[in-house]
Image (tube, rainbow, N blue to C red):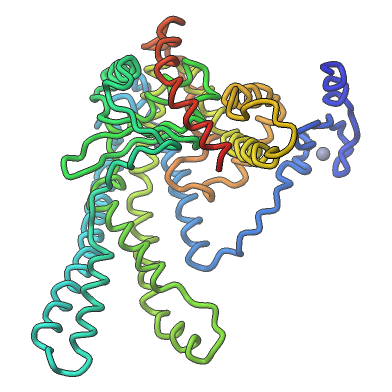
Length: 448
Ligand SMILES: [Zn+2]
Ligand SMILES: [Zn+2]
């Protein structure tokens, strides 16, 4: 079996573009490292980007390149650990002033967005009270009030614990929380109040409720494919977000994005089938363009800050887990989509097996199979994914800088030794605490 796989992997043919020898990719894509032939065979049937979207992408790309150049320049001036490690000293020269101005403008713009909501609320109430009995006025008032309720700023809440998405509190997993505290402390912040676990192939931190308590989200689709040290890197990155903050994550700006998103959804053009549809689309066009414009502006004003926060979080990851583990995490992020696909296949396979020869519980060993799949991804596939990421650049996700740039930045400078290394017994203890939720999430994944 292993011999066949080896034979397939080393079968060679000529690249149809440049004639260079190309290794057969086997289960993976066959592509040419010399000329990038077939490097990205995936057909992305997204709609051709509109004018606003093209502008947004161009701004995002330029902003990202500028930021990396700025960081590089600063690091090359010999600041130990780079600007990202030294908190507010991150602002080189007048870049800091410019950024402060951008943050102020973003806050002002966000306040204006909420001002519109307040206007709808006050205007709606006034129309209802003063226009009572005057034809349609109270109805317009009610419409305004309803919109204001939908658009209102809000606190996000902690998701309800469910079988497929357990929520852990400190007493549920004391050793995990102790590890979280230790990582948090070493990046200069404090731990979390709740850990939400699901099957996603990613992780994040956020705040919830009026008191802005802290929540860590761990997707087992990512967690399970990481080595223990890469998990420390992941936690270091996430807690790094609490340490350094980010304009986009402030309540004011975050809610403005939410409000603008609702506006965009409400004003989206309809499939025009009748004359009336055309009329409605025409009437909603100016406010729609305004909303799009404000969104692009707000994104642009917060982009630098947001991406800088990511780079800083990466530096925090390297400081806690060491450069190698932080860079390893970047590689694992490249295959996160593939892991999500693998989980989907597992789920479909489990369902189609019903009624057939059902020898064993499909949830049994699910995470081990996913981890084995991830571990078997060959280097030529990683290299391909890196090149695809580079091609797509900032288009895919404008909050995180492209993974290849993050990887390059981490491995370019001096190597950092790990601040925290868990002994195998400690790793096993944390794993044991998670055994129950691993099982529960796997069971629900194959059931759906
Ligand atoms: Zn070629
Ligand atoms: Zn991040």
